[in-house]
Structures are given as C-alpha cells and as structure tokens.
Image (cartoon, rainbow, N blue to C red; front, side, top):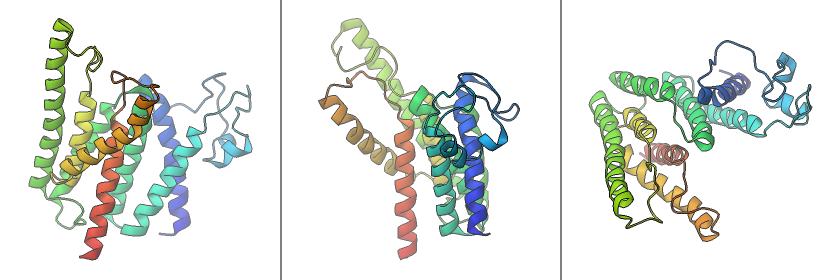
Length: 266
C-alpha cells in the first residue's frame, strides 16, 4: 500500500468524521444528504469539500455567505491523516491496521463530540464494543490485542468501574442536596455519565483488562493537569462540567504507545 494512498484515505475518512461530528449530536443521518453550510444552508460543491485543501483555498470562509468556517474541520482531517499514516507505518498491510484505523476514526469522532456537546453517542460505542470482542477470537492478530476471555473481562471491568463511580457519586450527591454538606464540590447533576462507562468498556474489549487501570490513571492525571490551571485562574469551578471522554482517549493512546514500545524491546 503506497503511503500516498494512506494519506488520501485518511483525508477522506477525516472529512467523513467531520460530518459525523456535526450531525450525530442532532441525531441526523450521516450517510445520505450533501454537506451544507450551517449558516446559509447552501449545499457545498465537491470542489469546496476537498479535505484540508478547500479550507485554505476558501480562506476559512463559506463561498456563499462568507461566514467563517471553524478551523476544527481542517484539524480533524489532519489528525486522521496522521493517525492513519502512523498506524500503517507500525503495522503495515494487515487486519490489525484496518482495525486500528476503524478504532482511531471512531475515537476521533467521539473526542470532538464529547468535547463540545458532553455526550458520547451509543451509535459509536456499542458497535465498537461488539467489534472489539469479536476480533478477540482471532488468534492470528497482533499481540497488542487480547484473547476473548481477557477481552470480556476487560469490557465488563471497564464498564463496572465507571458505573460504580457514578453510583457512588450520585448517592453522595443526593445526600448533599438533602443536607448541603459539600455545596461547592458536588454538582446538582451527575458527574461522569454512562457514556464514559461505555467508552471505557470499549477500551477493555479492545485491549483487555490490563489496559483499564493504566488508561483510568493516566486519563485522570491528564484531566487534572488540564483543569487545575483553570481552577487556579477561577475560569472553572469544581462544579463545572468537564468532558472526560477526550481524556480517556488520550490515556488509551499513551497505553498503546507504551505497550508497542515494550513489544519492540521484547
């Protein structure tokens, strides 16, 4: 497979990721219907929809209404290209490469949806749980992936830990609403959501139970490093809503990188 083909593939699927990021939160279809400007709602011509290139040719503005186009579109496409090229570089032409490209694309979509809308769509997590478990029955896949028993334990453990945290938080939050012990610490809404539990379950099904403590620890560390400066500057409060999905994904990236380095050393 030529690297140029991988770059084009990454760009095209990155463009599709943008469609999903824009449409899924509103429960709109992602397969049918041409792309359109959110402001003037004019259909976007194919030559204005070329990944990354069109954004810069149009100088980041809609051709029809001249409304600014978010740089996020180009960023998502660029990240997906880098992701596809990186996976191909390390794993070559293989089923593992295809699987990791599917996973990275799905997580890229989840990352930006959760970052903006604080939701993780079931339409992405449920299929990824299924694929993660089914692939574990193939003994010929890369050692990065676990066997079916490890995968099953990982999925259940990942979901169970977050479910337990949510249950504990909600129980304490109810007491807080009743007695008002920790008004400045607990939000009046739930902390983490079941979307986070399903996302961690995806991690477990794909990479086994050993990935769960690593991912949860480092995602929490990254979240703290990101949020603490805002707390110090008082631009955020302890009760502010924070999307945890992106940090879970960053924690998983660290896990894959560290495990791949260990496998290379061995």
